[in-house]
Length: 190
Image (tube, rainbow, N blue to C red; front, side):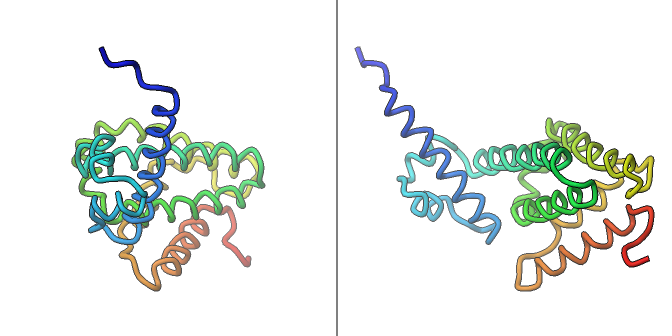
């Protein structure tokens, strides 16, 4: 009979999984063609270890998607509690743009895994996160009241269509400024 795994083994496995996900996030943000072998090597684990945690490339991408989008969702609530509404919204938009780099190269896998978004368990929580920020801005008088969070999400979806490159961050910043200006009760500078 095989003895049960020790706590150290479980801790090692959790640490390996976390390292794989961290490396994969950076790798996929840099290139949608990142290989599983390169991810394993950079994470300091064997390919077999990577495949034990994530049996397919798609499984890794979907887990990474769930992890990263949950961070973005959670951040909305924290920012709304800690910052003035416009600052919170801008900071959150910047994080969404960072997330967009990851999603750019893997959106087809995510789209397929979530039935085109119809089965995406993160969709409603993401909309609620947007609503938290919009409601705070409307309450302060900084943002137009009654803005539909789904409309804002559609505007933000352009962020994961920006191809990686030297001007990607600048382009995302310009787009976010346009979206934010459209949401304000008064455009910036007036």
